[in-house]
Length: 454
Ligand SMILES: Cc1cc2nc3c(=O)[nH]c(=O)nc-3n(C[C@H](O)[C@H](O)[C@H](O)COP(=O)(O)OP(=O)(O)OC[C@H]3O[C@@H](n4cnc5c(N)ncnc54)[C@H](O)[C@@H]3O)c2cc1C
Image 1: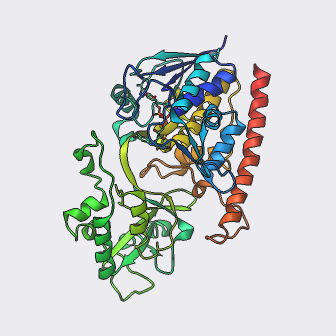
Image 2: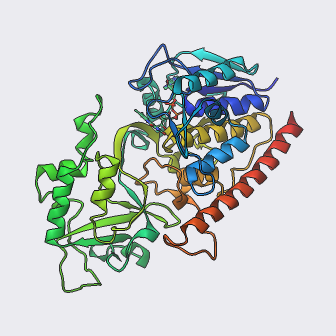
Image 3: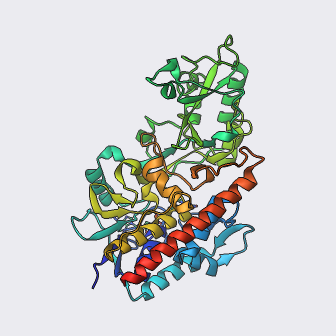
């Protein structure tokens, strides 16, 4: 009899992790606190409840990174994708579902599985032994959150995200922007040129402030406390405090010289900082925001140099419990200090139903194969799964780590292909072809291993 795998949280990630491990022959116990203990967003006691939208986003596996994740999960026999397909609703190119039928379907399949049992109740501690996956999501219960913070250190577990928009570097107009750190600070040339700067004239700044003040914003939920925002104000709130506030805050123009117009002092400067080791993504520094998505793209495209920018993700501020995964987790999603504990889903710093389920799929397979005595290598970086896990456990900047959606900016470039908008279709097709081949190879290798072991 093999060791039991305990999975805490029966959401998107926990359900998929349980399905994968159980199908590999491992006994699984899912510990789910609902309906005994609820959250502000969940409505039922079902597994894999969709807390907001009923969409798994684009299903295009050739031109879209989320669609590619769908493809990879389907190739691995994923339960979330199977149930989504079964309960699919017409939604153009998106994979939308009948949410109730979907989560009831996931619950039924797991309840009926001979290797799975479900225990209702909250887990409030990190155990000292056994094999565990914690997939308790963005709304992890308070008691467990405190236990995790005690283990990791309070500065390594966030209870809110404050996401600044992230831009694809190759869509920034470098004939207007330039690379320079304030006052050329830094010991190396790389550090002295660490920031990408977009200058504004007085008129551009005034128009930008007007647009910020007028933009549609999302309201805060109950529990999103004011104290949190003291150190991390949304830019539109800063603008409301005074038209000059941003010019003395994240947009201050000091210590910078525009090489395109060295004699003209910018009135304000928007700075972007590298967001991944590949240098394909840049975040707009200090630009966390509660503006609605449509308003964000309109307002941010007013920034000189970003007129044609494409956004890998837009900004936001939400209740969201997540780890500083680049410092805490290894490439197998294990807690470095306690490797018998894995984390999966949104708590690892991915964002979205699909990404969370995908990280559950991986964690389930990795944990099960370890129990079966045949540990697996981490998935190849060129797959969507691999690109995501590589980002959260190593590729992302640890100091500014914020949750991430899957996107092509996380992928290594394919040699010999054109950059920019023109080459996009060919580039995306090359990424997805390469990913599918690599994922098929990894699955074949790992499934043979599991079959030999059982
Ligand atoms: C309000 C809100 C709206 C969102 N809207 C969307 C959206 O529209 N689209 C999208 O793609 N993503 C959305 N997300 C983001 C996120 O992708 C989803 O929350 C997703 O469900 C995360 O999957 P998960 O498995 O990590 O967590 P969850 O699906 O939340 O699952 C975690 C599970 O753990 C349980 N749990 C928590 N603590 C404990 C404990 N101590 N003991 C036992 N069980 C516990 C919870 O009850 C829950 O069932 C939203 C998030 C929030 C908070």
